[in-house]
Amino acid sequence: MPQMTMRDALNQALHQEMERDERVIVLGEDVSGGAGGTSGEREASGGIFGVTKGLLPRFGADRVIDTPISESAIVGAAGGAALAGLRPVAELMFADFVGVCMDQIYNQIAKFRYMFGGRSTCPVVIRMAMGAGMNMGPQHSQSIYAMMTAVPGLKVVVPSNAYDAKGLLIQAIRDDDPVIFLEHKALYPRKGEVPANPYTVPFGEANLVREGEHVTVVAIARMVPFAERAVDSLAKEGITCDLIDPRTTSPLDIDTIVESVEGTGRLVIVDESPPRCSLAADIAASVAERAFKHLKRPIVRVTPPHTPVPFAPALERAYVPGPPRIEAAIRTVLKET
Image (cartoon, rainbow, N blue to C red; front, side, top):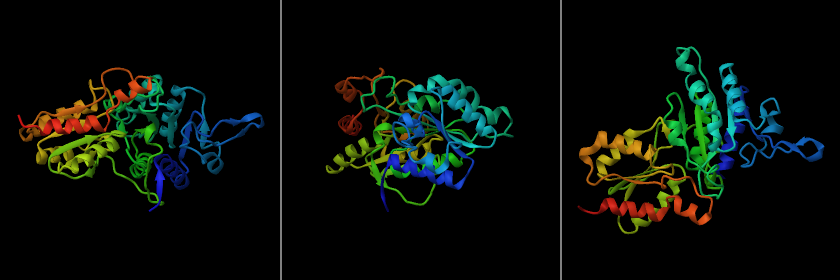
């Protein structure tokens, strides 16, 4: 099976779905690279992260649409196109800019199926680059999946690897509901095995990344490879963990998490979003409601502090939960009272 970066896996998914279904269109700022110098030719670079590279020469400007710098226009147009029968994939350059178009997402796209009594669907995918670790400052580094998960009517996807990214994006494009697809910027270069042919990864089915008996660890997006390093380090000492990657936060596969906790009796949740009203808090509450009698120790959440993401490299490194903090949290829940 070929090795591929997450960036290239996403790009391949877009190529294959646009080839399969002529209703699929892509729109956003610089998705085709913009005008190339004085010649006026498109350079087809695929935006600042290169995910849409090569789509323009293959599918043309009618299906790969460079938009004005207006998130409200991008998302509003995508929602209208979806209602009219297309399957748009809208790109917001940074997830942090979602506030500009929140009304279109929160009050319109998420509600269309409900307001129209199920007679209409809105199959739009909104892709966004998120996350800290690249020194892009507090307005370009936030992890917003908890905020998006709180909105009824949206499906929210947070892949942690190339294989899942391709399968989840294809699933998102084929889904009849609006999907928020969040790609961690620091994971774009991460390589993994990816089948060349199209495939889907179902929503609401977590991935059991590691199996163990002592602690359940739930990690999201970039926190998954960090948690892998911590879990693998502890395994050398005979401490084994279930490591669960939810892959989607809405729907959330809470059953897999609860089943694991029933076996281990201990839970550590690793979440890059701020701690207040976070996904870690939501998972902790759900497990406490359903599996409290199985818990041998209090649930531990590993999150950043409740502050904006720092710009200074040293401060940002301190802000993001890393393998040492995750390992320390696992050791904490293993201590006997």
